[in-house]
Image 1 (spheres, rainbow, N blue to C red):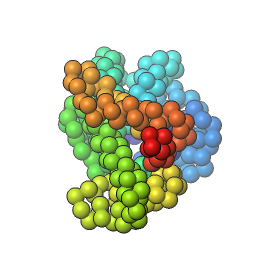
Image 2 (image 1 turned 180 degrees about the vertical axis):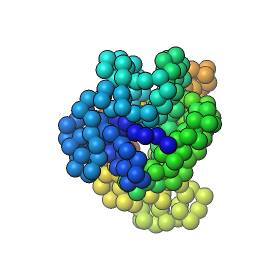
Image 3 (image 1 turned 60 degrees about the vertical axis):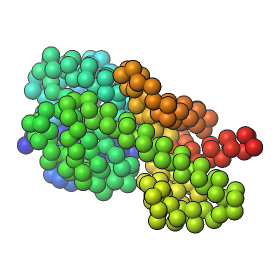
Length: 295
């Protein structure tokens, strides 16, 4: 059992995840660069470190939930107080969505300092982060994965060991690519079908009863896309980033994957057009505008 868990990144996903660890009676000390995020975690009953070095130096398990792998690397290796505070024997879990090749490189660097890195990105969005039912993919040596399983179980309902360190980040990027491609297909079907005269509710009902059923038809199409609420809780720029990671990985492997390249371009363009605050379900709006322009 870990005596103290440090949790870096108390944003929309990190806050409820850290909160679920405290509910499971783990001793958690959190940190975020945002004073408001630190205050919110403290108000929820969590302990808050005053600096990243405080958190890293007192933890035997350190969890990062940050926007990008680049920020994770900066925090672990380039932040002076943080880097110095990481003690040999510390176990680090990067739960962000990072590039798998960067993860394997970071793992090697940390290993030379006596620190072990696991990658454990999550899927399920804010709602599942709140109720502790996330799907968590985890990469690393089996013995280390088993050590942290009770910690991961406090945050997720499904824990899948994907293989070596870096493999979970690979799988997360591929999962989001498949999810994003499905959302685009559903959105296009809705636009074409409604133009013909079908009721959007009928389209979704038919898809859910047929082979076209997917996560978007079941969970997103009506409440977030057709309604134009566009507030599912997962940002478009993060989806675009993850698909870009998958496309870059394919390129690194000297693979030409046409649909993946198309999705990477489409989601990047949508993110740039709609701005950093856009929800990923606003792709439905972006496609509507695109279809009208081509018409």
